[in-house]
Length: 257
Picture 1 (cartoon, rainbow, N blue to C red):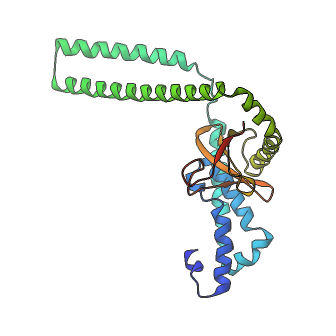
Picture 2 (spheres, rainbow, N blue to C red):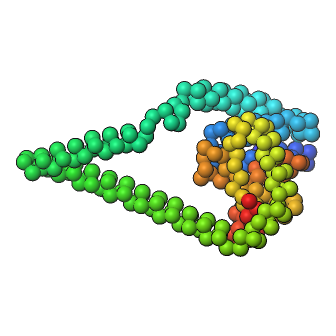
């Protein structure tokens, strides 16, 4: 593509620019989770095969590459979904009971390690105890940080919810129509992206105005993988910002839900 973008032939450069514009809509595909990436590639292929792109695709002799991408994506999609069918549903096992049994077994191992160290101390056993203690310390630090982060997030959310309650309700009414439209468009986006209905969740954070309006969302099975959708030609499409909304130089953000 870079070669065509720098071609001396204007018609080749023009076709390359059109294709580059389409491909830029899916710039985040490589970083997306499997299900989302596969859906984005399907949309990319559909856009590249649009009637308006036919001349440009032919000019760059890109059809074989598009066909190859489609075959590879279809094969991956089938394999991924076949694995989902064999996955164990959440709730199958009592995780709390399993953790209790694991703790009991680990405590028994630790008691034996301590007893052996008292009765028959050795260098390998001492090294094993040190390794175990380091691992436990690391896990406790991780859990403590996670608990602190969750607590801070809850306190921040509760603090925002308790200030200016009346104004928050007024804003909710003001954005009711926009939220209703967004709900419909998200359902259409899920269908076109071949996502499970209801998997795309709106965080409540919006950015920009009018043509630059964007919405922060995530997939319910990947709650930490946040991304942005914007409206183009009446449909939601993913957009990747060079400067994240809310940061200096980025679009202003607001809570609408």
